[in-house]
Length: 425
View 1 (tube, helix red, strand yellow):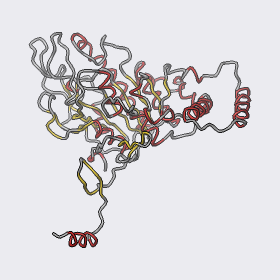
View 2 (cartoon, helix red, strand yellow; view 1 turned 120 degrees about the horizontal axis):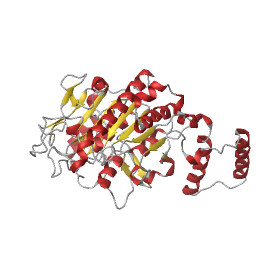
View 3 (cartoon, helix red, strand yellow; view 1 turned 180 degrees about the vertical axis):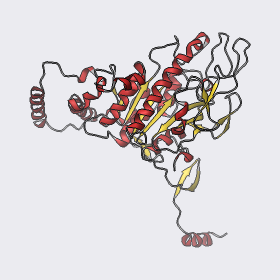
View 4 (cartoon, helix red, strand yellow; view 1 turned 120 degrees about the vertical axis):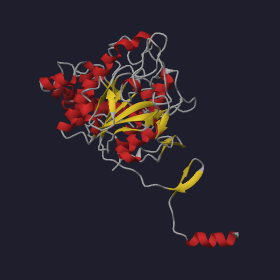
């Protein structure tokens, strides 16, 4: 075709929106968009083994070094979807849940690097400090009310959970006490509301006499001070009064981890957009989810504690008609292989593992993706970490195709991830 003919045809052809993907230009697909308003993200630090939880396989034998699951499996509310026997409370709720069984990445041996990947969606970079998933959601959606921060962390504060190049406004509020709230926000017992209000008016008067700060760090500091004054008020701090909940409900959630999940539900009601709750707290088995060697002997205690708290959270959210508004996510840095090590435990496996989605208004199917007979290789529907993140963004109505900016440098929000389309009706 001659150049002149091509230009003539192009001028009369219907216009198509185009996007760049993998160095090719393609017609843009319509954006998937959900209706969730909050995320409660449960972090299983150490590496939860899918073969022993959400993707059970034929049972193995550590003594004979026969690879396979450590436990028997049970049926669930979804035909064909089975779980580990120790997830018995969650099994009847699996029609509200999707165990994404084919999450994968190429970081397998080092916990910190894999944790960073599962929080930022990217490998560690020497030039860019990428924001965490929680910080991106805080940046994109903000808090759902004026009395709450957008992002709360009940777990491990470090750079992988932080805002990266998005700055302090997208950072987290870190909690150490589920019953008292952040120590730095609690007012002294002798400070009455009237005295606190008078002090606030003095600070406001002093600030109004100063020139407006132009430095970003100074503005972030001023914003943090203003937010802390708001958060120290009774509306937000009342979220930590767990003893106002019915005793039977608190008991249903279980121990310390369960109380953190209950607190997370209360924080969403105050307007917190994203909450991470760490599970690997009490090391019930002496090793947490990192079940090398003898650590696997009491792994069932961790699984049962997760089962109790997660089932209670989903049931509670549903009873309060908040499950469709709240996306519950369960993630871990990698999985465990089907083979047993010399001590009867398991190593690390990043090539195929499970993360979980529940609620959030998604069209759940019990399980998505398929691994082989030992859970070692992906057979159907692989889900990259960017794909998993894009699914979360889409559920919250965030444009997963847009760019963030590190200064003038565009950074794709999910590193070119694509949502799991069947979960969106």
